[in-house]
Amino acid sequence: MSDHDSRGMSRRSLLRGLGLGAAGLVTAKLALQPASAAAAGSGAAAIPRFTGPGPNPFWNSVGPYVTYPQKLPLIRLTDRPVQLETPRQYFGDAFTPNEAMFVRYHLPGEPNSVDLAKWRLRIEGRVDKPMSLSFADLLSRFEPTEVAAVVQCSGNSRSFFQPRVAGGEWGNGAMANALWTGVRLSDLLHQAGIKAGAVQIQFQGLDMGAGPPGYGSHAFLKSWNVGDPALDQAIVAYLMNGQPLPMLNGFPARMVFPGKFATYWVKHISWIRVLDHQDTNFWMAKAYKIPDTPTGATTPQDVASGKVHMVPIGVANLPVRSFIVSPDGSSKVPAGLPTTVRGIAFSGNGKVVKVELSDDGGKNWRQATLGDDHGPYSFRTWHTQWTPRSPGKVALAVRATDAQGNVQPDHGLWNPGGYLWNKIERQTLVVGPAS
Ligand SMILES: Nc1nc2c(c(=O)[nH]1)N[C@H]1C(S)=C(S)[C@@H](COP(=O)(O)O)O[C@H]1N2
Ligand SMILES: [Mo]
Image (cartoon, rainbow, N blue to C red; front, top):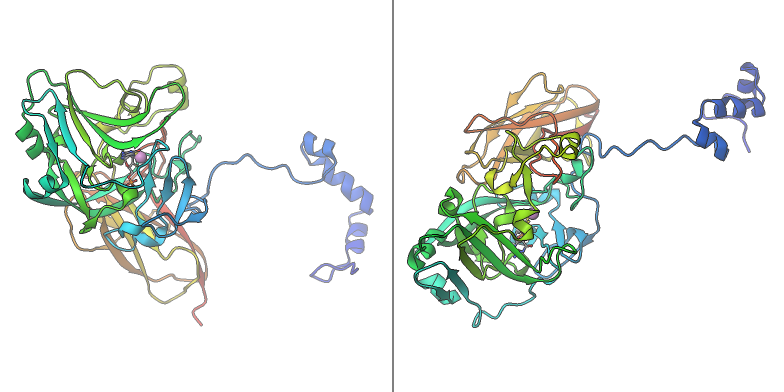
C-alpha cells in the first residue's frame, strides 16, 4: 500500500516533521475528542446535534415516491392515514395538476368509492328546512360559481421548525392551486334557512376511523362561527380544474374556503350541520390551534409557562409566501449567461403585488415579472432573468409582498403546532464556467 497521500507527501515524513510517531498522533487526536468518543476509543468525531435542514436542501420531505389511484408518484409521509406530498417540479404552473395534488387525511378509513346514486349532501340541525341534496340537485338547482384558490395544509413546511415539533414532517409540497367549481355555501344555507340560536356550522365528510387515542375522534369535524366572513366566500366544489375531484382529494364534493388553511376544506362533504352550541370535538377544541399573538408566534418557554392563549387556525388567513421552482440546484448554471428564475407566490391577505429576488444575501432585491392574475386566492407565477457573475456557490432568496403590504420575514416563527411558516426561501446554486 502506498505511503503517499494525493499531494505526494509521505505520511511517515509528515509524522516525523511533527515530532510524532503514528502512536503519538493518535494520542494527540484523542486529546481533542469529547470524553465519550475518547472513551469509546473510536477516534471518530462526535456527531453534532441534528439541527434540521440547512438553507433549503430539502425542499420536499424525504419519503418514498408512491403511486396511489388517480395520482402521479407522490412523496409518502404516512400510509394510514394517507399523507402524500407534491414534488417540487409540479409547481411550475399556476395550476397544480389534479394527479399531483397532495393528500392529507387524519383517519385511516378514507372512502375508496362513492356511489353517486346514493350520495347525499345533508343540511341539517338548526335550520327551517333540512335538505338532502343529490349530486344532480347540486349541479342543476344552484348557480355554479368558480374560484382559483390555494389549498395549503396548516402544517406545510413544518419540518423546518426549530425546535422541531410533532406532526406530519412536511416539506413545502403540502400545497396546491386549482380552479374550483361548485355552488355557494351561502346559497345552500339561504335555502335551508338558519334558525335563531345557531352558533356554529359544522362540516363532516365520509372518512371514518380512530383518530388520536383517547379523544373519541372517529370523524373529522370542522366548524365556523355563524357570521364568520369565511362562510360567505365558501363553495361546495364538485370540479377541480374542470374535472371531477380525484377520490383522494374529496370526491364527489369538498368544501373550499378561499384564503383559509386546508384543514377547513372538508373532503367528501356529506353533512353541513347548524349547531346551537360551540363545537368541542377534538379537531376544533384541541387540534389546529395557534397562539393568539399578532403573527401566531410564541416560544416553547411561554407555552410551558401556560400563558399562551390558543385559538382555532381559522382566524388566520394564509400568510404571504413565495417559492423558487427552477433552477432547483440539481445542475450547474453558467456564469455570465442569463438564467431564467421562476416560481410561484400567494397570499390569503390580498393578491401578491410584488415578488423580489436577491443574490447577495438579502442586501439588494430586484423585482421579478408577475405572471397572469387568476384572482387574489390563486398561485401567481413569477419569473426574472438573472446572470450569475462568477463561478462558485450562490444563494438566491425570494420574497413576496401582498396587497395589505405584508412582506415575508427572514426569520422562522415558532408555535407548538408547526403552523404558519412563511420565512423567505433560499436556493443554493452552483455556478460553473460558461465554456
Ligand atoms: N374529510 C376530510 N377532509 C379533510 C381532511 C380530512 O382528514 N378528512 N383533512 C383536511 C386537511 S388538514 C387538509 S391539509 C386538506 C388536504 O386536502 P387534500 O387531501 O385534497 O390535499 O384536507 C382537509 N379536509
Ligand atoms: Mo392539513
